[in-house]
Amino acid sequence: MNFRLPDSKELARLANELNIAMDESKAQKLLEYMQPLASGYEFIDGCEDELPVSAYPGRDYRYPEADENRFGAWLVKCNIKGADSGPLLGKKVAVKDNIFVAELPLTDGSNALADFVADFDAVVVDRLLGAGADITGKSVCEYMCLSGGSATSSGGIVQNPRRPGYSTGGSSSGSAALVAAGEVDMALGTDQGGSVRIPASWTGVAGMKATCGIVPFTGGVPMETSIDYIGPLTNTVADNALCLEVLADDGKSDGRNYTQALGQTIRGLKIAVVKEGFGWPSSDSAVDECVKSAASRFESLGAAVKEISIPGHLSGPGIWGAVVTDGFWQTLKLNGLGYNYEGIYSPALHEMMRDWTTRTSDAPINAELLWLLGKHLESYRGRYYAKAKNLVRRLRAGYDKPLQEFDLLLMPTTVTTATENPASGPQAGYDEIMYTAFGNTLNTCQFNVTGHPAVSIPCGLKDELPVGLMLVGRHFEEKTIYRAAHAFEQSVDWQTLS
Image 1: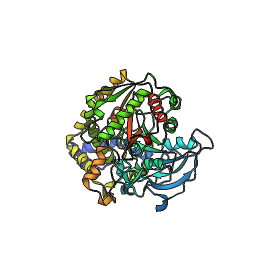
Image 2 (image 1 turned 30 degrees about the horizontal axis):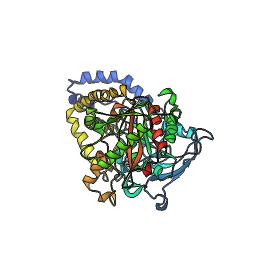
Image 3 (image 1 turned 90 degrees about the vertical axis):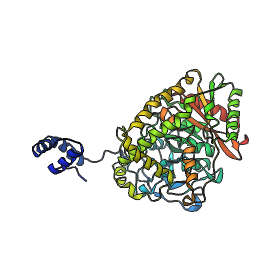
């Protein structure tokens, strides 16, 4: 649909809606003044879309058969070969279903995008291929990436390879499952409230959300630009650090040399155990004890470990919730594309999302809740978004102050281990969906709004299900996180701990 100026009658209608006085003479003058601007829009209509072209062909894909998709984690399979050399040469990588891989389907876990095909490669995809990685498929994610569980995707339920029948966590559910099952070496996830770290915790893999701005989000489906992150999921801390080196922008966080931190002693590091990260009303005491035991292991490796209190941590979910609900709704109103975004926009995604409300009959209750609340918040005209964004500064300062004395903060990633999946998506009860959708974010979502880097690593088992430990660092100090995480990983087999 090409641009056209309104006629005088339409201009009068718009003026009335905006309480602007208008008569025929004024309308004609305004239309005359608008004409030069209209010429600009007409020029844009005649231009081709400025989209990058991949240097790596071979974009054939297929939908996997049931016997090669044991955990329901693959959306499609493919074999896109990367460069002939590079730090990730031969590594098999899965890409979450809300990240663009040109010429492959992207559904964002929702039938609202059932027929969408990505029109360019995300920056992170291009970097993986340039580093020699092979992209072997797209992984299932939760419905519009709105759940910390794994039972809301339009593509079906994702099962936990550690114990099928149990949740992987979400929303990067398929990515975590494929890594935990050993079907890929690493996978990309996105994290907007914990969606890399939560499934890492429940499947026993490493998942990193780096400092805000280190990994470009260009080519990811946005939710709210201030909380959108892309991050790696891997079976080892070393692979995680290596992957982040490839994904990160040059010049950020000491030149991206994260692997230099591996193997260094942690003697002398100061680690603060955050009291408020434990003992939530929904916390499993066995998870708390497992994480505290792991904190003691850091002490045995030479770190100084001390419990501290950060009261503001408890208010974090409320602040994050106000930012994400209002922000996400505004993004949807703009057909899935927020304004003031410096990355590449997808005209094809914009077109596909124009009538998204007509294709949401399979939406889970948590998505419906956010849409309804977002629509209701319009009557407050951004009041709560604005206040929440201002409160983010206080929340950030609450972590920055102890991080002046301590190198890292430590707490459980998720406050419980994996819960059981329903037998099928339609059979899932409202309470079941809501609990995993938002209950898993209690310790993770704070760092999406504050921008601090945070990693989840497995630290033990409870009833044969993984327990995740989260380390949070100063902005741009991923090296310190990897240094501590790798030292812990190398000191013990987490699967023999309980």
